[in-house]
Length: 365
Image (cartoon, rainbow, N blue to C red; front, side, top):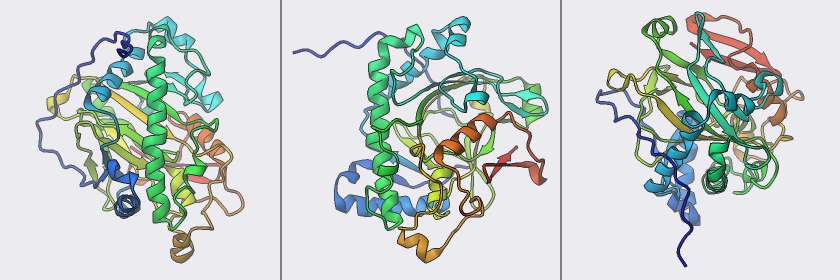
């Protein structure tokens, strides 16, 4: 029986790779095809543990999607920006600051970057329960593909990574998975995002920063690699390093939630988005992300069951006062509502700070 024909989607053509010799971060690679065996997980757990203790980022390969499938995802990701008009976009936007939720559109110029310059990126965010809210007309034919993709990200990418990180904490393999179950209603989200070029005047006012240095606030972030060089991470030595594009690979990092429950054993690394190098200027940057959150009622405090945490102690100064730790829902709502909108305390070397639910949050300009 022949397979069902997929709906037509206009092809998205990405920018060519950069020609510059950039200062790239040296990130280890996790081969997810090895995660299906106990021996493979034992090998990968060491790589994941050491990477998340230092860099906070890894590449992942052999994640289960072919290059053709990944290309199709990027073609779909372009739909909310190129095939939906302004009036319809307004119907599928929400009051982010009031709701503490990204679901739907985040318009361009919503965040303040610096010196009066607003951001020039647009989001479309989808909950794992893909059908709980209606979507723009142009996306409706491909919703079954989006639904399958979200499940793949959560179950076949995030969960294997959580098993590796649980081993690194000397916890049962399913321990962290059970804090981030796919079948439980939660506020993870798939994000399609498009960055648009800015004027030379805006670049000068922001020191070429497109998105301030920050930590993600969830459990695990999965970025599907794309060729426009713009993502940088702050190294342990305090240097900004570029993240290199690897065809059909993933870039995976952890957020605040995993840093907090691991007692700082794993690091939510500061990262930012900057103007691409000269060879890629003038192109848009289309991104596909999956932000996996812990379940709403999980308390973001160190896991007492972890032999590692008990042995090495608390490794972060970002935890709120003991007994006053926020839940995942509290932290998510606060970070979402405040980002790019709240008043922050100006600090030295361009590092601004604020305290949300007892958590120290830093913004790097």
